[in-house]
Length: 222
Image 1 (cartoon, rainbow, N blue to C red):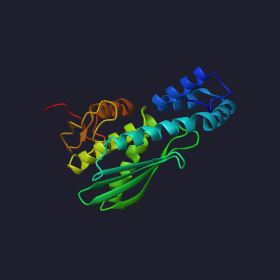
Image 2: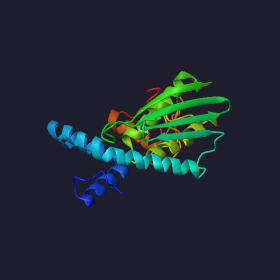
Image 3: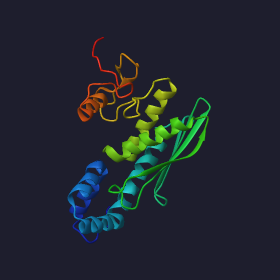
Image 4: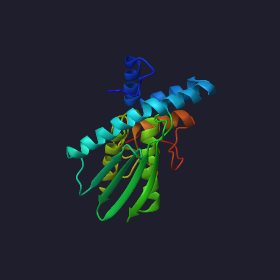
């Protein structure tokens, strides 16, 4: 199955592919934090030549399989994936609005981050589609899982926004990427709602017990 891995033991090759397939963010962190500059460059070259083509093939196959199985309603979401261009194109349609985004996979994926571009939009305010681009880039850059996982979660977030649910002002998502909760913690002053994990992390990093938006003291009173 992994014919391209001719220069290393097949078991080691399979282990690398499987690990980076499931834990791309963890692999990227290891590469960025652990290796010397020379080792980093040689690792990127090896990845681009031997590993990334296999990862792209599997990512594209998974997406095409999901599309064939009817995972997306063509009336709301169309997804196209290509191994040649290393791209995944999503076309989201809702309430007369259209949004097309192109996910580009770099040669040295997953150590080099995926990029996302909004190529077409109709009836969507710029600040909204820019936020959605940031959302999917964040999902693919900081969370483990497949590109299909990110596409599915992005669609769920877009559906919730079109239903009228406001995203968390910290992570820009309606559905939290880790525990899939909704933003329910509300500031009693400005009434913005946050995910519990997001606001807890905000308090820890800022060392302040205040609302990220209005800067007023946070109260847990009901």
